[in-house]
Image 1 (cartoon, rainbow over the protein chains, first blue to last red):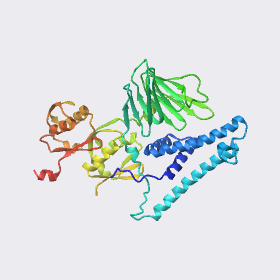
Image 2: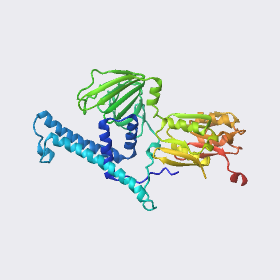
Image 3: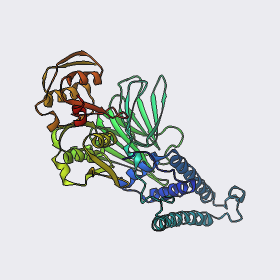
Image 4: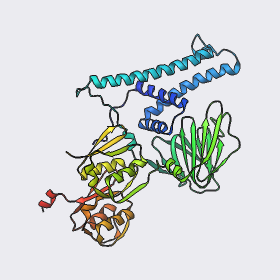
Length: 353
Length: 83
C-alpha cells in the first residue's frame, strides 16, 4: 500500500470548499464535522490560506453592512465599488455568493461523479475518493522554552510570545493540549479567538474551531478571561470564571453575543474528549482485531479486517495510537497482509493473494 | 540507553525490552514461542540491544524506517536454507 499523496486539488476547488466550510460554520457543526473541518484544514496549507481569504471577504461585507446599520445612513458607495450600496443588497450579495458557492460545490460533486462513470481509462483515471493521508500523520509534540509540553492535534497552529511577566501562546486554530511548567512569576496564557485561558501549572486542552472555543481542564485550575487586546469580545462573559479539573467551558464567539457554558465531565466523557492525544497501546497475546480496535478508538482513520482468517494471528504489540501508518507497514512487510483503502477514512486488511 | 534484561523466554523478555526502550514493537506469539533470548546489561542503542538479545535465535527484526517501529519474526525459510 502506498502512502504517497495524490494530486493536489486546484485553487478554484479549494476556494469553493473553504467557502462551503465557512457557510457550515455559520450554521454550527457537530463534533464529527469539526473533526472533518480540522482534517481538511490540516491537509494543505492552501486550505488554511483560502479560509482566511474567504473569511476576510465575508467580514468585509459584514463590516460594511454594519457601518450602515450603525450610522443609519447608506454605505459609502466608493467603499463598495458598486452603484448599489444598500444593506439589503449587501446581504443579498452574501447570500447569493454563498448560494453560488454551494451550487458550485454541488455542481463540482455532480461532475465528479459523472467523471467517474465517463473516464475509466488509465490516462484519465479519476479516483472515487481521496484517501485521508493527512490523518495518518504523526501528531506533533513540542517542548516550549519554559519546558511546557504541548501536543498539537492535526492542523493546529500555535505561536509563542514569552516575556519577563507572562508566557503567551496564540492558538490560531485547531486543538492543543498543554502540560504547563510551573512558574508562579509568569502566568501561562493561551489566547484563542476572543478568550484567554490563564494557568500557572496545570494540564488543559483548548479546541478552537470556527466561532467556538472549548477548554477542558485535566489537572489543576485555569481562569478564563476575554482577550485584552486585538479582537476582544464585543460582549465579554461576566467575571473571570475559574475552571477546575474535570470541567469543560464552551465559549460561543458570535457577533451579537458571547455565550459561556460550563459543565463537569464524567470520567468517560473526559476520556472521550481527550482521546485524540497519542497513547501507547500495549497488547499481550491479543488478536489482530483487538489491536485494531485499540487504534480505531483513537483515530479517525478506521482499520478493518477483510478476512476472518486474520483473526488467527495472536500478537504482542506496543504502539503509539497515532502510528497507524507504521503499524500497517509492518503488518504488510511481515505478516503476509495487504492493505487497501475502502474509502477515504477506512483501510481494510486482507491476506495477500 | 541503559538496559538490564535477564536471559529468558522471548515472550517475557521482549515485553521487558519494549518497556525499557519505549520502542514500538510487534511480534507473533507463535514466532517467539520456545525461544530464549540472551541477557543484556549496559548501554546500547535500542537496535543493538535487541540484536544482542536475539543472538543465536532464529528471530530477526524489521525496522519501519519512518517511525522506528520494529517487528520481530522468524527468519525466512530461504535465509535458513542458505545457512
